Image (cartoon, rainbow, N blue to C red):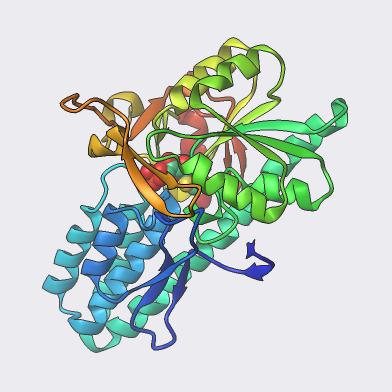
Length: 362
Ligand code: MRU
């Protein structure tokens, strides 16, 4: 996608082929800063501290982390240890393990001398595949938006939560890909952007992305969605996901579940954009099986923003001494999900459909 008219991705290989550059997403929307990552340790820190975030992006960045290790020591022991280390950086998004395990399997069968170049090419392939997958999700999602546009006057009003945009992927985004494609096709769209407390990925990242693309949008407090749905001001919810279990339960940023409940109560379609790399068929039940990351309470008790003098500062919100709990994700039960928009088309959030989808790909 473009920033100030120039194509940009949140991840790009450095010219020497030994590292990558990533957008430091902690600094957006006020500053666009690329930072180099040159070792698996750098990658671990960037994922854990959320310079990079979003399920598909952390998978691709972690793959490059393993490839960086292969340049230094490509022995079985070193690669296996690094893979385990990288997978431990964040627990919820399954794309991380998907990408690292895929790359590890790809290189371990090769002679040690061939592994470094193969790992680098494998990481590139994972990143490029993500772009194609998200573009395809956009094409399938576009049909849903076209259908809504055809039956009502005025813009199609969407609601999204967190950032499942191009910043969370290698390009296009998942939930935002249909929106960008509809906008490009001349369909009038308007996006309600949940601010997404506590880290505010909606307010700081999704709003910035949509603004760069010229897509009309309005930032709302997380608590406003139910009211808007009740009054007919949301035609469709589209969110991303970090892990979908075999029964169709979908884990995404904390607060997604409440949006799905409100959508269900008000007859608003609730779609989850799901690259198949986010599907975890090994997990039967999402609500009870998906590991939920607990992050520091400081993300709740403090907030950062720009002062009128232009300085980005952090301030405290809560009384001294109050403790804060910060579960970073929740799981929306499959019964509340209208459909999963995958790269292969829209699929029901239920076990038989998901098994059939993956069987068909084997
Ligand atoms: O904690 P984050 O910012 O990594 O959470 C991101 C989300 O929950 C996204 O919706 C999800 O990863 C899908 S990104 C295409």
